[in-house]
Length: 283
Length: 319
Image (cartoon, rainbow over all chains, first blue to last red; front, side, top):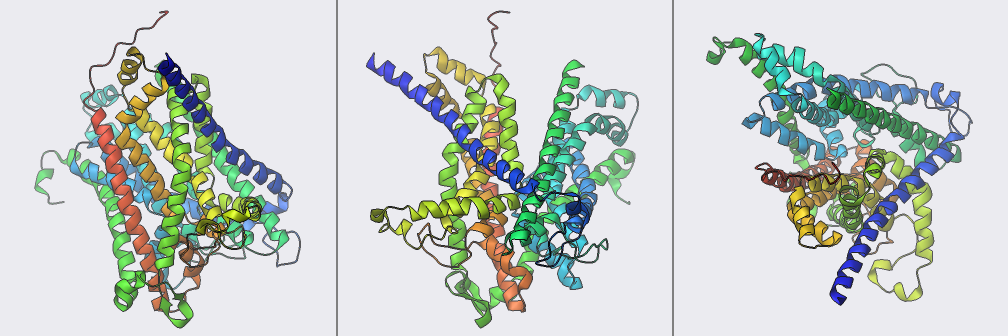
């Protein structure tokens, strides 16, 4: 009898501890979001999105150039990562049992675990050092390398979810394998793949470390991909570690924009996947 | 393409080679990272050899490069983060996958994913302006009798090992918990049902599931460790950036990734650059090993599942 009561008590205690763990993790989340929103919103205005930074001591100014820079660098990264990610994902899904498929899966997981600062070092060695020039292109390459494994894994997973009957139908109609994949299987999985790319973009847009010595920074508007370029994340970093009150406020505003991007991308992805699941269940 | 196997079945072969090339590119990329880092650190490797990792003085101006404090800072902060994060992360994974009511599950998954999605730089900003002052208050409030303990010596600065470990643990929690959740999902329902049928309490059934999933769970924890080792921005902003080896949680210290973030863009001479890249190379190797081992754990768990035992018939009570 005693033993039963003890067992039940232990069980209840552990269930309660698990629930407490969830609450404990939600506290910092709420805490961070609260600070980012309340501190950021006061400095967020139109000028923040359109103006360049002002010199120290001069009020106003914004991160217009850094926002543009982030778009350019992330865009370059996507341009570079999407073909490699999708094609290698297709290979891994189509030839799932082969040795190369296992190797590419393993390489993608490994690449995903490489610290972002190390990827920055790598790109510095191959794209900055030879030209003696920090550039937006180098920053894009660094972000691209980080995106590849994310896109590859999503593509592979989603292709494997496509019902085999679709592919078999295409093959039965006389389509070649390439034709079946590109005009039937991939389009069926496309909404999911796009969602995955969106999530990867959101994650990559928030990266700072790989840009520190690839894209570097720039005080002005720049669209030249061979020149150093400002990005939102590096700008927030520079401002955060500066001693100026005014720059700190701008850093919070930048953080709010970053969190906003991440939040809306995750929300959009969540709705898209929920809809996808409904469609798949319905059919 | 004069490849013999193209004959007759060329469409298939072209498709295979066409997509396979990209797969090879991805694999080559990982190899290239290692080769390039090695090439860029040759000067330092030749000049210092193992001495590089056995000395403590980091003085680029005098040409003295001892990297031991960075290894220490990286390992110490990550292990502390692991100690704090693991129980919480496992608690969350268990709650979401085993205990939560179905309608709470999705929102909770979303919230933990959001925690993982917040950029490192935002954690760092919050760390500097919110967490560090809190840590400083805690440090000031340390009772006298505790100050003799080596963990709590030194002036209360706020920035230092404690702040870094706390912020790292917040960042690692969602990561470890989401992998652990996936692993728990792979445990056959029959395991739990069997436990319940024998009269197990909830915890005893969960313990069964945990035992079944143990390799995967170890993998999840190690994967979180790998994340913590490589984390850069948030740590750089709160750890205080002072290369020293000490047990004190209050002391400002330095990590491998932080020294790269702070000094690389300003490093002037070649030896200095190569010394920094060597730190990056070792960070790469350490995270690589941790990742490979944890993937093997998780994969062995997934393979265990593949030859699935006969699916248990679920009897719907009110159907």
